[in-house]
Image (cartoon, rainbow, N blue to C red; front, side):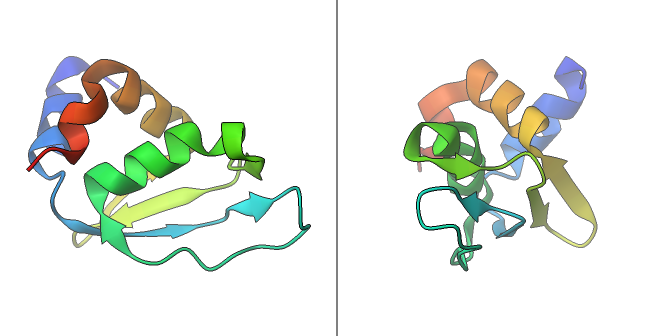
Length: 87
């Protein structure tokens, strides 16, 4: 993902997003993750492995057609960090 695409996604950080494909490795379940703002969804996916979630097959859907995989979320979190969840 290039810088221009990252900035475009950053500008949409308050758009509502849906997270699918997360697996809880501790409880061996696929939990329902409540919808949240895109910046919060990116943060969740980027930090989820530390909380025993497998996000390799996860997808964050946002807006009309936008989607991000776990690698893209990690890259966005590395680039923008807490700015993604700031008001």
